[in-house]
Image (cartoon, rainbow, N blue to C red):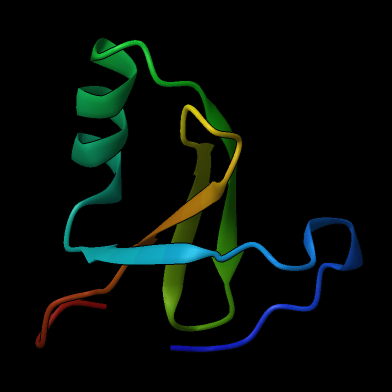
Length: 70
């Protein structure tokens, strides 16, 4: 868990889920009609996609490389 400062969303939560294959996950959620807001590299840790739930809350999907992967 980590804290993200976002004054415009004060009082709301950020949910983050870790996956091993972000591309596959994005393809699946877009197939369900969910729009990916942005995809970004997160340092050496991997990549992160951000989507909004039906109530407008941000949901982060973080790709965590498996051991032995670069």
